[in-house]
Length: 140
Image (cartoon, rainbow, N blue to C red; front, side, top):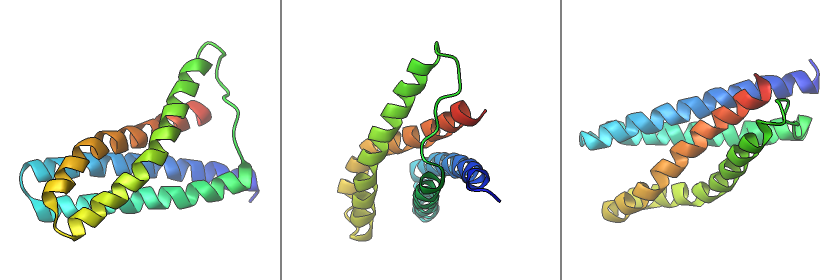
């Protein structure tokens, strides 16, 4: 199997991980709104794991194949670049926020956790969804 084939397969796996992360985030939100803390915790930890796996596989894929030029029409390229740029910037910003949320929850500082989660959740969800959109725009 060539590096390009492995990279393409990893890109598809990463798209699945982004989708899983988004679904876990939404399910975790539903559980916390119902005050089901146990299930909320499980969903959010699973979302952290899927996002962490995404990061590992992304680094492997990038090291194998590098960047990929946008294959679509020039008229769509500015939209792709706007989505990609916002995705990349917010992905870097959300990582320390998620780590802080985990720290706050583990220390049972739920008031501070809730306050930070109100900002982190929509950013993390946006990053997960736009990761899937970027994949679709690049590979399909």
